[in-house]
Amino acid sequence: MADLITPANLSHLHLLINHFPTVGLIIAFLLLVVSIVSDSEAMKDDTMKPTALGVLFGIAVMTLPVFTTGLAAEGAIEKLPGISQPAMIAHEDSALLAFIVLELAGIAAWLGLWRWRRTRRVPPSLTFITFVLAALSLGLMTVAANIGGAIRHPEILGDPKTEVARSMFSVSSAGVAFFVNGPGHQWVWPALESAHFVGMTLWFGVLLLANLRLMGWFTGIPYPALHRMLPWALLGFGVNEISGMMFYLATPKGYTTNVVFYWKLIFLLLAAADLLYLTVWPAAWKTEIGTVTHVRERAIGAVALVTFVAVMYCGRMLPFLGNSF
Amino acid sequence: MLQLTTALHDTAFSTWLREAETVWAFPTVLTIHTFGMMLLVGSAWFVDLRLLGVARTIPIGPLRPLFRIMWFAFWINLATGVLLFIADPERKSTSLLFAFKMLLIIINLPLLKRLERAIYRESPEPVAVTGSTRQLAAASAMLWAGTIFAGRLLGYM
Image 1: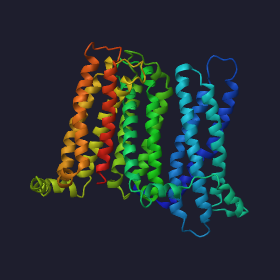
Image 2 (image 1 turned 90 degrees about the horizontal axis):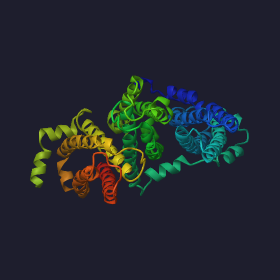
Image 3 (image 1 turned 60 degrees about the horizontal axis):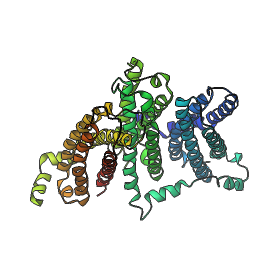
Image 4 (image 1 turned 30 degrees about the vertical axis):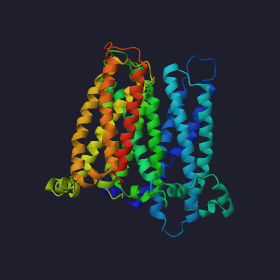
């Protein structure tokens, strides 16, 4: 795969998958609105909300590679003629804010799904928070995408003053980089690395037990009991996404030019898919004390555990296998 | 002492571990050490969280095999830890941070033994968790967190 990591391919990939947080987010948002309306009647169970929340969670997960390939695309085209440098920086910073809010929406959506699995209802407060965060991220993503289009087509923006006004809705990625790597901040990177290892250990421990149960071990434990522990896995993922994004923003080129980083992203997406599976999958939920699980559940569990180790392997080996640092 | 670590540092094996231009030397040992860490501390934190009151519907009896997983992972990490020490004996043997990490582990291992005994003393299927067991779990969990921090920071000495 190493020879696929060319600047042209990475910009192409960014343009391809950026439809998840743009077109995909619009669909997820509309689905959420429809589900709120359709599930609001005096029905016993929520039937459409879990689908809407699942799609929103998936979009939030897919936006991670969209953001990271964005900085790769920046490295690929920044020296080309006809590229608007201010638009590129404004795009990156507004995309960072949109990304942060969308990740929060993804967390809220996941919590809604997690509660729904147990009670068959998404709590109204969580539905409300998810709706607000999804609406907010959709607006911010529209701003970011619009500025992104102007990198190649400055005529989109028209008045340059508007561009500045729009980029007010942003988080400075240069500011994050300075916090992590700036002079006098030598302690930040090592502290974040330690937090990154703690977060990994936390999510691995929780998901290890859940997957081992579905693989047919620990048969004395009913799966719904293990399900209660899943938010701690999400907490671990959250710690790692924050610390990981800070590493990435501090030294993007160390990652975007390294094939191992893309392998890690792929395994990470698979790990997120496993978390979704563990959260809502009916066959998993119906695993009681002594239930012998289906070969499908066993296979998924085994693949998931290999995937988790692969995420760690790619991360730990980044400095050794590629050219990161 | 210093002579001993210098002699160790200069052995062919130590030099190979440290300097060999292959991922099978230092990087692989370090990665296996990380794997042992997530297996050991991940399992330990799971038990600790349950004892501290998270997910109370999880029966405690069937969790006992986790202690075997923890000890299995501990031996992996003792072995890989010795290799990592051999790769860099002069700096590790004089590092306060390294001594601190070893101290945390030396305190925590008997705690782990005591924790298992405290949980399963009355019955193989305990239902209630006593206050002293909870304190043991909290102390052990925090010591593991400190061990991870100290270990990770060793990479930056």
